[in-house]
Each structure stands twice: as C-alpha cells, then as structure tokens.
Image (cartoon, rainbow over all chains, first blue to last red; front, side, top):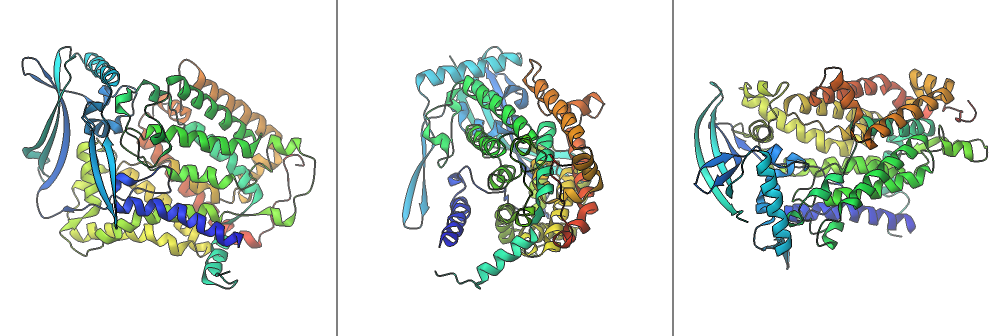
Length: 172
Length: 377
C-alpha cells in the first residue's frame, strides 16, 4: 500500500507540472523535472528569416543609440535581458491573462504594476546602466523587434522589416 | 491493492532497478567527483539577485517566490551563497553527508526560484535531481569523515549494491518532457521544414552562438539531412523510455547522451555542462583502475589532496576576487578562455569515461563488489 502511494505521489509530482506546461507555457511551475522542448519549426524553402530584438536609448532630441544588452544587464545574467525587456523593465502597467484549463479558467497576472518606490528604484537602475554606456540623457528605452532576411549563400543581410516597437518612458 | 505483485508496473520497476544498479563504493566516489565538478565548472552564485530592482520581480505563478512581493535583501542571497559553499565543502568530505545533500538541494531551489523570477525558467533541473535522489542514498558510507566517525562495521551484502532507479526515472522523464513536444511537431516527414534550424537560427543570429562549428550548419544544403537530424533528436529524447529497461540500453543511452551534448556544443553552442555531473552518477567508478588507486590504495593521501584542493577553490570563491568556477578560471590563465572549448573538452572526457567503463557497468551485477571502506584500506 505504501509502495503504491509512493508511486502515485512521484507520478503526480512528475506529470502534474508537465501537463501544466503543456496547457500553457506561462503556467510552468518551479521546481519541476522539465527539460526545454522548443518544438518550433522554420521553413527551409524560403530565405532564412529570424526575429531579432533590439534595445535602443532615445535621447530628448530624438537621436537613437543602440544599447549593448550584455553590458546593460550588469550583474544580471545576460540571457534574461529579453524577458526583462518584455516586462518593460518593470515599468509596464498591470497585465492579466486568462488561461483555459478544460472547464476552468485561470486568470494570471503576467506583469504586476510597480509601486512608486519600485518605479523610482527601477529608473535609477536603468539610468545608471545607461550612464555606464556613456548615454546620459535618455528619455525613452525603445524595444524593437525586427524580421531580418539572410542570404546564406552570400552570408549577407537581404532586408529588414520592423515588426513591433515599444517605447518605455524613462523620464525621471 | 490494485497493483498486483506481477503487474506490468512491477516488471518495469524491476527492469529499471536492474538497469540503474551500481555499487556503494562507486556511488561514494561519485560524491567526490560531483563536488569537484561543481566547484570547478558548475558553481552557482545568487548574490547578484540582491542588486536587481524589485520592479523586475515577476515570479512563476507556481513557485516559492510567488509567495513573496519582492526580492529578499542582498544579505539573504549572500548568506545563501556562503551556505552553499560550506555545504559543498562538507559534502566533498562526506561530513554530515545527508544533511549537506538536503541543505544544498533546498538552498539551490530557493536561489533558483528567485533567479527565475525575471520571467524565464532555466531548465537545469537534472542537476538538482541528483541531490534529490542522493537524499535517499548512503553516498557518505565510504571515503568520508562520516565513515571515520561511525563505529566500524562490515558493509552487508545488501548495502553493497545501490539502486539508482529513482534518479534514472527522473532523467528519463526529463528527456521525455523535452521530446514529447518535438515528436508532435518535428516528425512530419516534410522536407521543407526543420526544427533543428529553428534552434540554430535563433541562437546563431540572436544570441551570438556563432562559435566552433556553428557556421558549418549554414552550409548544410540537404533537406533530407535536416529531417534526419530532427527525427534522430526525437528518437534519442523519447528512446530513453525504452533504453532504461535494459542495462546495456541504459548505459548506451547515457553514452549517446554525451555525444548528443558534444554535438550540441559544437553546432548549437549550447553547453549544458550541469548534465555531465548527472550522468556520471552511473559510472562504475570503483571498477576503474585509476579510481581504485586514488580511493582505495592511496585513500588517506587522496583525502588530504582533495581537502587542500577544495579549501583552495572555496577560498578563491569567498575571497574579494570572487572567482567562481575555478576550473574555467585556471584554464583561461593557461590561454583557453573560450568556455565552449572547455565544455567540449568536458563532454569528450566524459564520453571517453563512459566508453572505457561500458563493459564494467554492464558486467557489474556479476562482478565482485569492492570490500573496502575508507577506514579499512
């Protein structure tokens, strides 16, 4: 009986998180025994197309400066940069998402709104990181997603298309 | 009871148990290998989380961190880092082994849960699975301070063999979760799509993964080869569910896994070093001549060497210079600064260990198990 109970607990602890992730990636729990799936595909017929995220600082006069993302993150491991950018560096307003789990509907807060103190702290951090790259007077951080088309034969870029652009106001 | 003694579940459990069985001496030597590997190449530090603005705090919904409103203060993460250093050290020497194992597991889960509160969960769970599985094993029985402190007694026949089926199941399930989604999407026999290239393009063009042999992938002009790569990746990741049912199959799969990671490192520039420490749990270390020499013939001498090395590496880490992963640091001083080259070296070395120990592992149940304890060399 104990053995059966142990088996069932182990099965629940393994399968439960997996089913949650399969239902919706934002539901992935931690800790859980899950490995990255990455079950995406690309077309091999067309030219190579990939989406690139770019981070820019826009100064008061409208001039753009590309930000070196690895340096910008400072002590934070650089592979988190695009995820932190997705949350608008903590400056986004609250965002909710509803996930359907069979009959049930689950409402998730994907980004919580920062308090005024947290906002000030985030702005201080952003400006300090920008200053470290020699950008002193930025008013906006621009997160731009670009589709880039690449010619493999010549190893050159064919064209670029801006797909999405989000401006984050960082005026103090 | 709804599961009878001869049920298919029992049969599967018995097969997995046979496939993953090793001996207690090998497991105790693995403890030392695991700790040294962690100190040299897999050190985790969490102090940086203390510098992250609280506005960035965005924990997974189902996690310990979601019980908090913001990141704990910097001193908390400094304390976690120091405690990890101390328990890695005590685990290396086998002092309060079970407590050290459990403490490391809890501390790393706490550190990771806040680290993953920036919107991304890293998938390094298999490393923690080793610690979880070892909480139920006696990997401090030999070559440890615990064995010196305990009253002397012979290790019983039953205790000499070790069942690592729990760890085997965790590894298999982990790979199943990676392969399941791919099997639905990648195995399409459509030569105009590629799953492998979706990983490659993102890494190559967006994440700077353009080193070693990565540029050679751009020259692959055979849709058939790309489809073959997709299907073989799925077969490898799901094949573990069958492989674990036989001893030869399991060790062959582990050996293939080393090759898989080596190829990933060369082509996709994804190192996954932490998994190396996981697979090494199944190596029959006690059957390898060099380990017999270090751990049995020169046991006390080796313990002193490991003590000196471990103390030096942890001092390096705790010193103002803060040098984690001393292995990478030392190699960079020797002119090998590219971490991917080091990772390839690690995977080649581990692949060779698996190939060299293949026969010993498959024959282990019938081989004579070592009789030695550290205190009775």
